[in-house]
Structure formats: structure tokens, C-alpha cells
Length: 146
Image 1 (tube, rainbow, N blue to C red):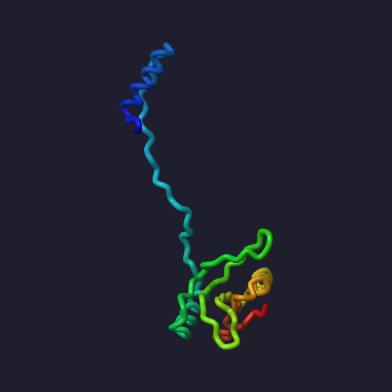
Image 2: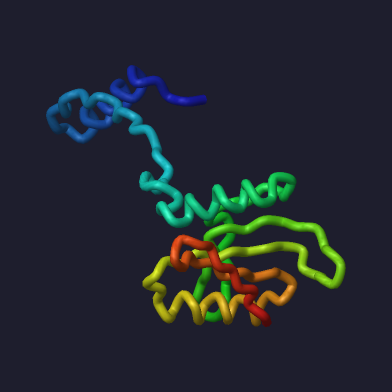
């Protein structure tokens, strides 16, 4: 059974009396601070990713849900990779993949991002990995082979 604040103060006063010291001033019960989960407050996608997301939804209206930054893959010791978009898909003729992942890059792409998507394609061959970029206002896509 929990102790009420009044019972707490009575016990505290009794302890102080037995010690022979003057009673301490009554303390107020500590206020509970609400716990907050750590969450990102910024936008989930940049402008280029949002544009490509709209393109995917337009081209594949019956495609299963496309989720931005939803999965993180562990490639090796301490190296993780999160593709821009992932979606479950159904196997098509000659295609054994069960999932599709897209990486969208602008005109300046860093070497580590390209290495990570190639490494992910090698580590997870059951996923169809696609690299997308915009060149001259036209979207280009490339399938990354394992």
C-alpha cells in the first residue's frame, strides 16, 4: 500500500525526534515530470526525395505502401544503411525479389552512399535495389545487381 504525503511527513518527524535534532522543514512531494520520447522534429524527406516519392505513387498506384526511411540494414560491424524508400512487392516473372528499396541522390552524391548501396545489394540479394537520380529534369533509375 503506498504511503500518503501526510504519513511520510509524520515518519520523517518521528525519525528526527529520535535523533535528537531539530525537525527538518516539511518537503513538498516531488512533481512528476512528463517523460518525452526522443523524436526528430525535422521533415522526413528532403525536396528531391519528396518529388521522387510523388513519382513512385503516380507510376505505381496499386503498389504496396512505400515507406520513407523505414528500415535500417546492418551491413557489417558498426555500419548501417537506411535506404530512402522501401516497399514490399510481389514476385514478377523472372524476378525473385520480395522487396524493393530505392536510394535517391542529387547531383552531389558522396562515395560512401554509393558504396553502402552496393554493399547492401551484395548482403541482401533478395531485395531489388534501385538507385535514382535526376539528370536534366528527367528521372533516371538503375538497378543495383548483387
